[in-house]
Image (cartoon, helix red, strand yellow):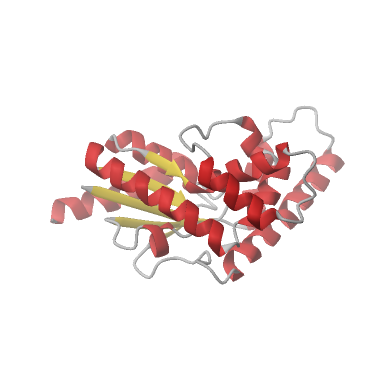
Length: 221
């Protein structure tokens, strides 16, 4: 059995790495961050909701949602990301989603002999005994540029691009601070995690580094 825990900052490459490792080793992958975005997306659909009872509402939604399909484009919007970051600090919501994540882990291990999870507290909270733990990060400027490229905006004026980059950097810094400072399962690298900086490497190079670590250790065992 092989369990792979991948944590890290947004747009650092952790999600891409998780997907590639899932394909390489034929084990299921779960992007836990999208679970919070799924809840946030449902909150935003309630036009009459003034977000005053966002804790109660988020927990109610999380208990009943089906998290099997997490590919909706609505989950990638800035508004959804903002709400997801706000609700992710709620211990009661995290407890609900943690249980669902563990259900995924148990099912995947039983049926496929392993799993890959990525998020912000996987190696420290969800899979503390994972076979391999990675913490992925990159400079804030590179992460913002990657996020801007994902938006696939053409014919963007240079001044507009600079403005968007600055806004992305601002939002990322705010989210990083929230994730790192929340009292419940803050975003930190597990003590036994391999820390990889992707500022100067691409997705294929990151995959190569990770697989060399995994297969080198598997060979030793």
